[in-house]
Image (cartoon, each protein chain N blue to C red):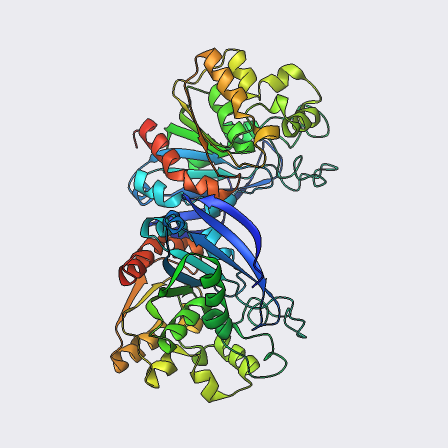
Length: 281
Length: 281
């Protein structure tokens, strides 16, 4: 494993680093960020992975989220992957802001020309954890996952499909039902070529309908002034699906809050506390 | 006064806003950010102004600093101006990253062609406070000022020249003696045309030598792994000048920390506590 350090910075008595490595899964050079809390100097600590939203990079959450202070307090490693492969050389990948580069949707594409590089599901669930385990003092038996918007969708679907691996999951303003919103429909049409059965494996509401369950509570914060609330995010579909499935959900609607990191950072402490409790950190 | 709202976002139960207005001082449209804590809904609260460093904008501190959480806790309005005029139309203003646009050095230029627009000292100390007082629930009798790098230089020099107006001052990695470092020498040569007496009015060490004093303690944090420490920042000159002048200084050298906002955000809580105590917030 060749891991290249792009930069490392002291931060809340720990280390905020950015790294890149050649990915076998995507065939590209992938970047990610890791925050190591001070306690990681003396032994492995639990791992909390954050998935960012459309147009974001591995830096977004680590610059804007205000989470390192809390990770230091709760003794958690933070892992933040990029949101897609970059420079894969797929025709059209840089054309749209909501598809292709910066918009990997945390799925494994099956349709051409995307299937070779756009495999963020396998990258996030298999290759990246292996890289983290090999290079950082991470207790991989204690993992949580969360994210924002497209990344909230990623966190919820990944946790529902891997409930044995993740002890905790949460989301800020997730795309709750990509099959039922324009962002998701576009992504599934492009990456999955209209394969509905494949798409249902990447849709939180459909996963719940099809029997997937998470042992803990799904924690979700959603701003009521979010500009994408009604057309793209649709938390009411998540709420209905959880009710019908008997899935525990703690959905908090936040009056006045929008889709920005001013919203995300406001409720970051609640989310880190949720994960820390589940990870017994 | 025409104040245009660029965006407003709920944030820690208060409001993070970005604004622009036609500036009489610079002759350009100036942008700034204001964070209003929840307590500002019911009455005026003290004002803490932050001055950012080279290449930064009015957004940098408000995105990266993690200060809104603390401002909400301490009932402080945060004000963050841009670091220079933009689009002033001065030949060469966009050529260098450390002079001109993004590098106003918080001084009033006297040399041509800079003297018309590059007047950040008057903007920060006169026009911007008037705009804030007119448009926000700000108790202008209780003000503090702080900043990072070039903005730390700005905060220290402004507080030393206006000790009656500011109850508190602090800096992260300030340019301590611009007359004695390349960034400052370049700025003073360009903006002040080599007028040494004018330059001494914008240099913390020279101000102390020339008799300026601040009633409270100058709080300064400086990373020991800062890439600009030895050539540009020179806290040892600040320390010596304070000792000689009898000026109270609390300089903390932080092992391992660099010049980034990963450093700034780590010690933000200390600085907000310092200002809140002085402002009796």
